[in-house]
Length: 568
Image 1 (tube, rainbow, N blue to C red):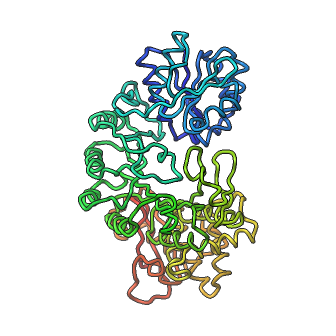
Image 2 (image 1 turned 45 degrees about the horizontal axis):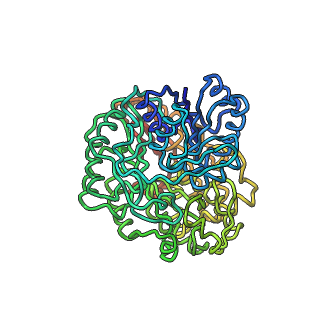
Image 3 (image 1 turned 135 degrees about the vertical axis):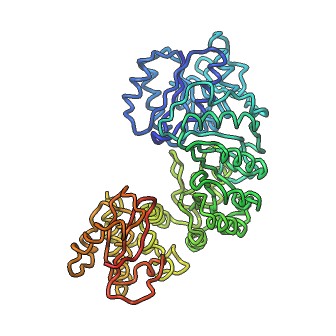
């Protein structure tokens, strides 16, 4: 029996490659079991579960996030199942397969590159007990000698790849399903594995529609397209998205796109889709022309920004933007400009990542030219280069964490918007840098800090930075807290305004819901908070036309959060 297995980075992730290899085995009538684990599981338990199946062959799918744990499992698997054939494949073993095999002699075979055809020939030869000599794309042992066969050419006809979905029952278990409509990328970015293969190959549209229908009918929550540039052919991308929009179901779809390639017909269509149906991940990477030229990244940043603003005005698409620190020619000053430009676009999610010098990429081969220092183990992340020292990278790591805690959590929007407009206008990087310095100074980095404490820390930081406006920051943080924490008490350190007979007034107001809250469905308990200033104006939400001694705000949580001033 054959086991196809991998260690995913999280439970919600799934492995597309194993689905294809399962199709190969199925077409050959080879019995197989697909077993997906995570890197958070006990390696002993993973070993036990594989062992109890008594497989004759075990094939592992290897990536930067799982290779270190995978080799531990395989080393012990060889001891407890000495007769089993251990096979590996995936990007983490493909580009130095000979060295990998020699360093890990308990592995029998490496499948290099696109594996479907190679794996098919391997299974056939294994069952026939014949030689692996003529199988392109394999690295294997001939006695005690590691042999690397000639590379296999990429598949030109992707319709020849077995179906990943639709041939077996699907269970909607809340996990993300990965899918591809193409392989390769029209661009040649020096840091990306897709640059190792030129050109783009497309899966036929009718096959795509068949498989996606199957996934939606099964109730899959999210399909994540792994195409490197989904809309590299805008007309084709639009046709597929129209098809997805016409499907009935609750499935959402995530794409990695080039936003500067969106045309008017596409964004007019996107303005009509169901909110939340599509999520776009867009790699800005850098705004430095020298950096973009050095990494072979061609994009029209002005058009990218214009298209994003059109999408945001429609309010239908969730936007995820990526920046990468550690690129050539980008020092802290340049990175700050890239950060500020991207931050001003106000994405739903802003990821500050760090360059990974992956095996097989041009930037790794040319790393000496930029004086790169990087981790010699996965994920091969940059430590320093000619433009950024390790101290810079370390500070950026703290900024990355704070961006995740504060901006990407979406629970500090009122406060952060005010700071971006009034405290550090046009220079949000300086805001996060100052916040990072504060966290380092107060020895907060690396500590387990709950959400409530994050509000207090931000208040203390802002009060130190701009004490004259401390009251404004306090009220904005209270506003953010009540919007996003309907059942929790406001942290004592933030305090709250009290007016005469406040409890009785609130109770009386809430008791007469028909008059005071017509249409309220009572799904969640509403809240009333009293503010000493015009908080909705301060937060940029609305303006109280008359001046009053205090400002009671009603928060209702039926569908999203609604805020309005009331008479109390």
